[in-house]
Amino acid sequence: MATPSGTIFDTGVTQDFLPELWGDLIYKYFTERLVFKNTIEDYSSLVQNGGDTIHIPEIAKMSASSLTDGAQISYVAPAETNTQLSIDKHYYSAKMFTDVLQVQSSYDLISAYTKAMGHALAKQVDSDIAAQLITVNQGATLTTDDQITAAEFEAAIANLGENDIDYTSGDVYFVVNPTLYADMLNPAGTFGASFVRADITGFNSGNSPALTGVVGRLMGMPVLMSNSLSTGGTNVSGVIYHKSACAMAVQRDIDIKQQYDIDFLGTKLVAHTLYGVKLLDDSDNIRGYKFTNAS
Image (tube, rainbow, N blue to C red):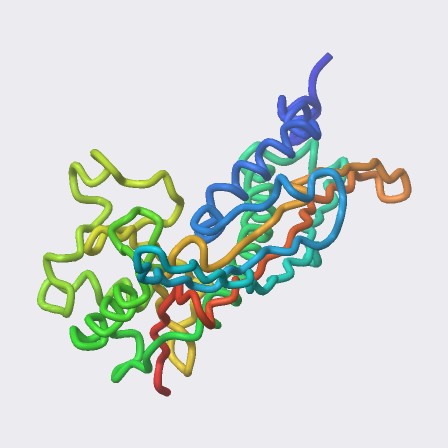
């Protein structure tokens, strides 16, 4: 039987609307866009069996005492504070795929929708982590927005060293906004050859971390770029921090729910995640340094 002109009976793409495929694609696009999540402490294992709060002890710095032979040892009572990490962030991204869309669309359109959903959730998670990290106590106001002078960067390195933060340990990260990153690429700028771009041959050999968003390395620190740090204004354009500066707990990773709605002749798809994020107390244990724009 001849097929009427302009009518498509079988595009070969209907099978691509399986929920399993949607979930795999959304999770793939979610993880590929995360920048901050893998650079901070992860307490997810503590909330997998329920609960909505984690109490994280913060131990004050201690000092060694001189001991004279035969003298009595003096004991100091434990004195720690607790930081409360609440699982209070529940976000979703939703889309309805109508039967018409399923029959007439190409796989690329399906991929585009699942990518948009995954990226939207990743953007939210990164924004929540960035909002915590930019509240670290230590930092400096930049002379020129989204540009760091040699003196300003040296002050940051000195501050980290004075607070026992080894920026070459592999656990210290420097995250910058796109404008600051662009300035770092200037060979005649502040960083010059000290900044090693990630696209340089051999960059990943040896000790480069498997992180999303890495654009280079500076003085042993992985440099990452994120537009969760805004440009201009009085925004924080860059932050250097040890991974222990912030903690996150994911109670429900990307979870996919779907249901067919006969009233709309379409499949409803929802991807959601449940988590909490908190800056750990740095009033005594300094673990971060931010660069804030002046105007």
